[in-house]
Image (cartoon, rainbow, N blue to C red; front, side, top):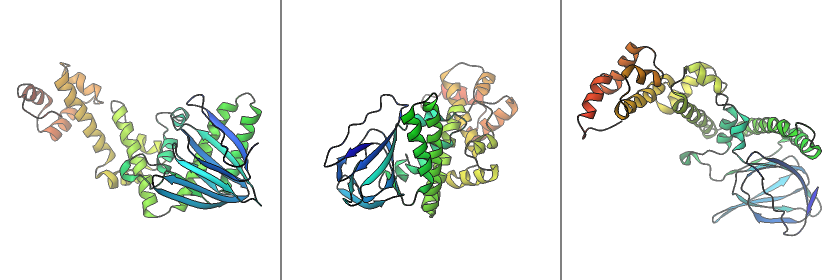
Length: 304
């Protein structure tokens, strides 16, 4: 266990983007303002003191004690100060956020949704500070100590075990934080994350057989509830939104290639040509052939 006194701070680096490092620190005085290029989860196992975050001209200081959890996004400057009569014992879990892409399959993106809920990536929904403080986060204590033991003992399979434990840890933090922020804003951020993740999935896999059930199962919601959330955020049903993506892609292919129309339809996910013509004409007011001929012969016309 590392002991920190005065302003000394150990320099920590991740050797690869898929590293997960666990540490245990004893802080008897103060750790000066510093930041890292990774996500940091700190659990206060013993003691009391203060934690400060400095962003630009703002400075936020919070009392911390046994049972509290702090989660900081990368590049957030922060510091600790311990009560001299009650030194801080802190478990640290540090990792690069890119590891979450390795921890979940393309059709099982719940972990990334959790991370985006905790640290929104959309500037319009960004929280004031990219850090989280949860009091009485006792639900994570056992998980972090298990991760620390795995990392310290380094037995066969410990890397894979801690990747799985990281998912457990994030889900536990998400559940407690979501309950803590049960306000409308908290729910809106969560719904926004779900919708943004679903749209990104559709934009990448639009040619595949995607149904409402495909989308709802990715985020562990019922079809009806997912449809309601998606429509509330976008104003459209998920299937109508998917159709718009597919038809827009089809229009791009019609103008950028000489592919037969049936091939274009197949490449954007339509096997039924009659249905493809119907949806295309509904969106553009022309059949695919009419659209191609008119657009290619009219350079001034707007492109999709």
